[in-house]
Amino acid sequence: MSAFPHPTHAGYPAETGLDIVRALRENCERPFEDAHAMPPAVYTSEAFLALEQRDVFRNEWLCVGRASTLAKSGDYLTAQIDDQPVVVLRDTNGELRAFSNVCLHRMSVLLEGRGNVRRIVCPYHAWNYALDGTLAGAPLMDRQPGFCKEQYALPAVRCETWQGWIYVTLNERAPPVATHLAGLTALIEPYGMADYVETFHEEHVWNTNWKILAENFMESYHLPMLHRATVGPHSKLEEMECPPGLPAFNYHWITKEATLPIGNAHPDNTRLQGHWRRTTALLAIYPTHLVTLTPGYFWYLILQPRGVGHVHIQFGGGLAPEFIDDPKAAEYMATLKTLLDEVNAEDRRGVEAVFRGVHAPLAKPGNLSHLERPNFDFACYLAARVGAT
Image: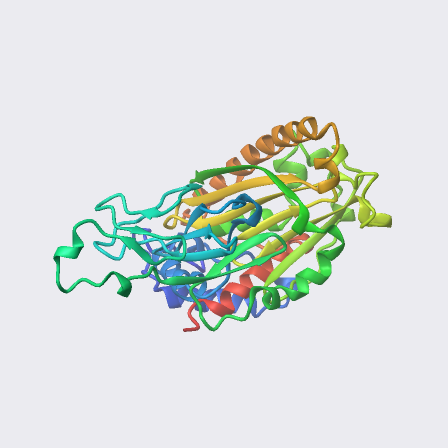
């Protein structure tokens, strides 16, 4: 019998979320040299996902997008923290603010997607809110003696920026995001990521567990095989570096002569010197923000679980400022986007195949490669938080 039976298989005992947490922690207590992949139930159990939502998503800083996409007053984007809809917008003073995206009348969700508004208008009964969250209008409610408009304001959600990214959290006690990610700031400061310009943004839903996709991003061990038709032939495993991660993130480096001109530093880039002009950083910011940062471009994934078997993905990218100013910027970006779409299609096939595999009664996690150190660090991050409340 597999050491980690799936609770839905006939004849197998049901595992509680805490049973799975114990198995995960036992796995993480091994030295890395004998580390194994996470137990299958980590990816398949609804009970474990409920613990993740409670102990991770409701407490951590979560990235929701690039600040530069909210350039004008009234620009907004929407996001979800567990069951809590959130809207982030640029107010009339030019400040970024985040609020509960739920009407204070009959609790309809207010805004969807991205856009620009002068007021936040409820699509149900037209209660409407100013960009500071205060109630600005409520049709015919002046006929109700007990109603006082001044008593209504959308609950604020903590919202901060780091390196050009917007982060939100429901945790009032969480340290500032800049403090939380100070170690990463020091590592990547020469890249100047805050000034990179987003040039595309898409949203997708894949049929896999969110952690399988996160782990796929964290390691480059799979590149020569899964991406053999695209970037695989240019990936030299023996030259990859996978240092131990830090509490809030893990990372690894790939130094190479890029197949695309924008993979290396632009001639006008004076920030990066020596081998850093051709070094790519792959950043996994816990729990769900994944960034490939090269000297010339970046691309990213932001993940949100939609149940055990589906993950909502924000997929975007853009160019370093020197390439934005280059006359061939549009050409460079079109070439990059074509490549990323092909790589994403390969990744989707891979992570959806893993999700089918972890349900198998005979599925058993094997030893990790030295290039999967980030996966082990991610497992230890989860083991320390899930079930800790």
